[in-house]
Image (cartoon, rainbow, N blue to C red; front, top):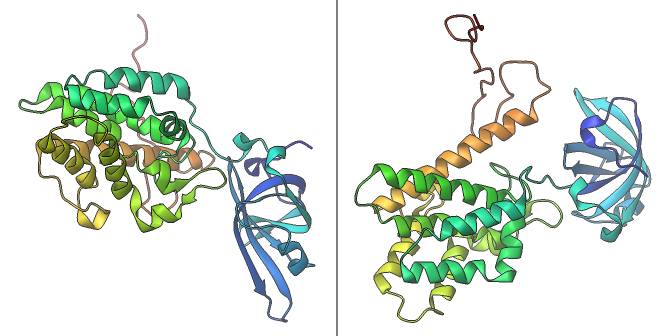
Length: 328
């Protein structure tokens, strides 16, 4: 059976394909009959689905984050496409090609990781260098760090997203420190590479992208500080002041209490990291939202709930001369 992707689904199609269950709710219609309300997804998007017949029995066959094969037809409800399912079955994960269901960075993960490892060598402080080496040589850490997304919904929401985001931050730091005197470049670079490491445990990414129990209860900032503290404990005579300044970078990198930072930035390095992290996350968030609406011919995107605004897409304006100069 060939996979049918959500972006290719058209009204009145008959669909026999596999999807990831991203939401599931068993409800009761006005006439008292049970029905099943589903949110299905793959790497190209999400679609709502309904089961009107035999809903209780079919609901018992699977749970949220399972993969199911559905036989259905496509209808339109309130201007959105919807699957009306008349039969389904649960799929075993070994039957599934996960890249069909979770979006993945378009960059080479191993090449990005190698580039980040090279950037980490710019840190010359012996203690920070050893700390970074401990993380990069930790196979359990690197396995998750390479595949984790950077967020659940705002930016770099794909496999390899955390690595891609971290690499960008590392590159930006190497450029920024050239422009300011008195910056502890080793400290800033180490903090930039480690600022989001807690996300490997905050987020789940083997089915749909979601928060783990640890992520909901502690958050990636707390998790990250604990991970760093554990590695520092393995390094003899690691200076207390250096550990404190590094932890401050992690604790303050969201900038404000209302954005989840336990502390606001109080060092030059911390304020730089906050702005670079904020810039990359917001620019990538804009780009991902614009990309999702590439089929929309309007100059504007739809309303972005998290950014609380519409985004203007058509910024490639011509020069005053009316375009590129022609060869004479």
